[in-house]
Amino acid sequence: MSPYAWLEQSLATIHRADWYRSVQSIHGSAGATVVLDGREVINFASNDYLGLAGDERLIQAATTATQNLGTGSTGSRLLSGHRELHGELESAIASLKKTEDALVFSSGYLANLGAITACVGKRDVVFSDEYNHSSLKNGAILSGAGVIEYPHCDVEVLKSKLQEVRGNYRRCLIITDSVFSMDGDLCPLPTLLNIAEEFNCMLLVDEAHATGVLGETGAGCVEYFDCTNRQLIQVGTLSKALGSLGGYVAGSKNLIDFLRNRAPTWIYTTALSPADTAAALSGINIVKQEPQRRNQLWENINYLKKLIVNLPNLKILPSESAIVCFQVESAAEALKIGNYLKAEGIFAPAIRPPTVPTSRIRISLMATHQQNHVEKLVEVLKDFG
Image (tube, rainbow, N blue to C red):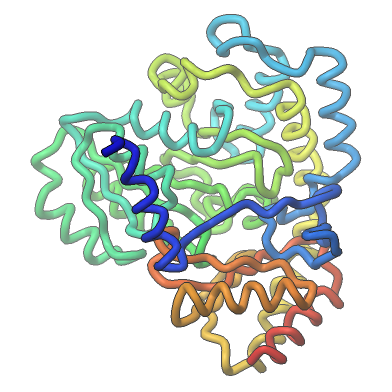
């Protein structure tokens, strides 16, 4: 028997469980509407919360950087890949996050892997929220540290587990998303910081879905909860509200200097391309200069929440972000609803296990959605129900 025969069997199992996934080609520029399968649909599947991925200023910044610096960075940052543009972006991130310094990675996933594996090892322990993103969970595993999951946002269980085992380890790291990407709810950040201080733990918070969306200036959940001056490790992405690609870690100068010397996913990876770097820098400038984009996003979020209250057939999950999900009974049902929505001109895909514990339809709002886009979504959901 071929050593690869198991692949066919595994794929058959995935199909039977209605967990099979395949790509869907989006045509045209990113935006509140996109072309899918040859027809225009309203896009409620995007993480482009501020609508910057198709903004002409980001496109021009990326184009100019490519013309001046080339398409690739050609090497890792410590060898031949560092450009002044990278430093400018890191300064802009630190300014937005109000931290001493920041470090740019080639993706948010790499930022989490690099930060976690650099900060803890075999003599240490990681406490992880059970709903954390894959990059956080895999970073904990790859670090070689002991990994203890606690129930979603259950600070009492977290505290109890720390009381039991904290003394057995050298260093302790608590890791959590700030906005949970498949639910839309927020972590209890102030309480987590208090617990971290009580038990002499580091705290790493992934601001991927909060940067540009939450906080008075769009700095994220840390700003939203008024925790800017407290000591912690902030990770995020440039690929969502900031409209580009890449990731970052923001924190103290000592932390960033240490990561430059010890984070393997930064040291051994080609630097972020000039185009992505310039686009992200332009995105941050727009976040700072145009708060009306964020205000418009929240108007759309609140408008949707107001309308769906009148749809009692939907089991809406608690949300305090631009992500609104409603839970369904099975993966098959989620696929059925997702296909119906697409047929009616709404792109809001089914999210199924193992990505999430229970199947759901995930809706993400953008600042560039029009009121009639939101109204049509609710009308289609009402007709289906």
